[in-house]
Length: 253
Ligand code: 9D3
Image 1 (spheres, rainbow, N blue to C red):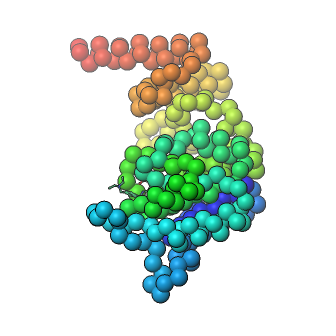
Image 2: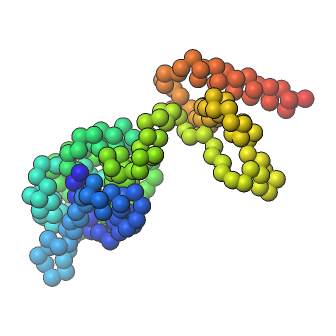
């Protein structure tokens, strides 16, 4: 699958491509990443890519022409692509979107802005969708673009080892993960939960599912809202709620 990114800071992407799952996927030809720098399309001696905002105010805006030339060059090579602008004003990027993009296999062109933003006419003419990665302020779109790339590329066939690929299918969907432990079985006075050493695979599976439900209920109750529950999940959740009621009783005594 082909990915193109428009960025004034192409070297930031070395962090993504140098090692790890994404680096290997690119090395194997599962994903192909091309970077396009608007500065390479400037024609003035200062290689100007930004200018002051019409209407006044603080900060600078990415100029139309160098950005437009970079987008046109990328599209000429990629053919048709879905064009996404990373923006604090975008709709929320999530796992559903990552999956949809990975499954479509269509070339993706990401625009990572700097400064206060990009000239709106680029968005009008070229951009299909604007995506945000969350409610916090970044210094530019590059880290957001890398988040999208990482989330999509790891889903492509051949990106992960066989074991990890199988795990993706079997994971209790829509829940936070359960706690994990490895050797030794006791360290600094802290034991591994006995059930995990019992060899009782049914009990282990139930414990893990219950821990996942507990954590999700405590930390991300929004994820449980509107999620279909199996009869087993209902039972495990009822146990958690009963146990937390007991804990409160104990506190009051
Ligand atoms: C004062 C108005 N700010 C908009 C909320 C200015 C501003 C902040 C941060 C303009 C650009 C940026 C740079 N951020 C991104 O390009 C960005 C981003 C982010 O900051 N948070 C979450 N997702 C994203 S996607 C791109």
